[in-house]
Length: 89
Image 1 (spheres, rainbow, N blue to C red):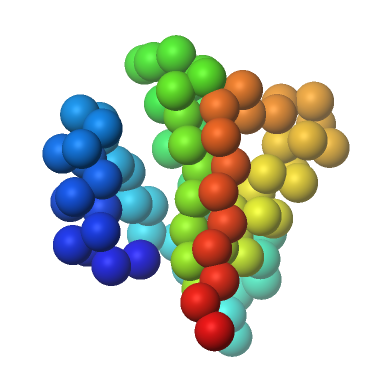
Image 2 (cartoon, one colour):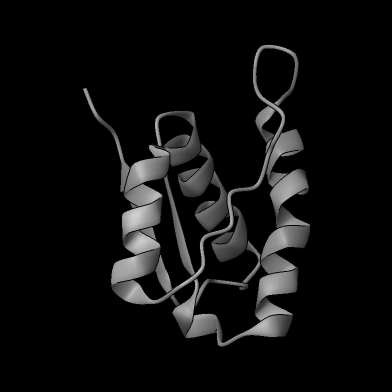
């Protein structure tokens, strides 16, 4: 995701953006990435209001965002906030 876009987003919405570093294919499976971002999500839940959390990404991050949202839904831990997936083609 373009850092300029994230910078603009934080300023316009008066918000914070967290960009977790996660393991990527081909050296890792998708569950490795989910397990690496889960503690970040849990920490955000403890710090703030769940409905203010936005899960988003583009390219590989978009795929991870979708997989993570599905992971949460299967465990009845759905984000009360927004999930946003973006693919540029």
